[in-house]
Image (cartoon, rainbow, N blue to C red; front, side, top):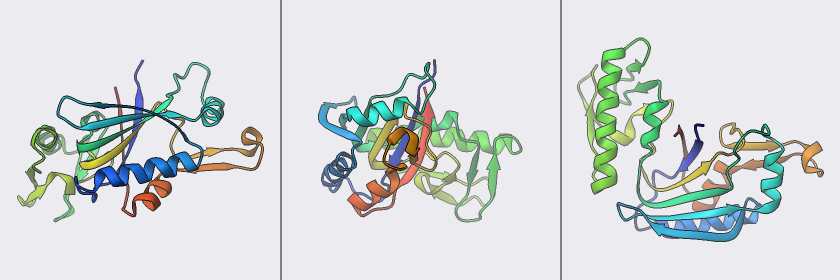
Amino acid sequence: MARTFHVLYLPNVSLADAPCAEASVFSALRSIGLLSSRADERRDEVGRNVRRYAIAETAGKLFRKLVPDDFALGDYVESTVGRYANGWSLNQVERYDCPLCKAPFQHCSDAEAFAQILKDMQRAIVEFTDTGRPTRIHCPACSAPVECADWKADVPAAFAHLAFEFSQFPPFNSGVISIPAELFGYGEWLVDLPSAIQSAAAQPVGWSMGRI
């Protein structure tokens, strides 16, 4: 069964500032009742610091009520400090737009150009996670070299030095999980993840997703 995850990432946070921003975000997500204080930490194959935070018990019970019984609800949030890019986005993206000439490239109507951008984006993801160097991808329409992180996409690759993966969560609506009053008991509970993260880090937040 495929596992779905959502990514909220901070594209403007530098590598040097990422640990401090990650701590601020964790504190904010814990304060709204989403996360417990338990975390498992490891370094992955390219040397990034990865922390896995457990979902708070009450939040987990509420989330369980929002999904079908056969849904394998995730019980953690994983943060990555270091060179992050979501390679699984390439299985979901349907459209890229050049930020310079605004030309759209769609999977269904611009197959050849779209396939070339997809191939170049895959190479850019490997280059960035291995070395940290951004790769430029030439636009098929205007021929301009565009940095990989600047391409607009319906499911972006999420190039960043700080990212949070929400594995098998209840359905996101632009990053907001709505728990109705009849389940929460005290009025509707809106878990506005992008706003909480943006406020804690004082940086803009991007969204991506993938299925494994």
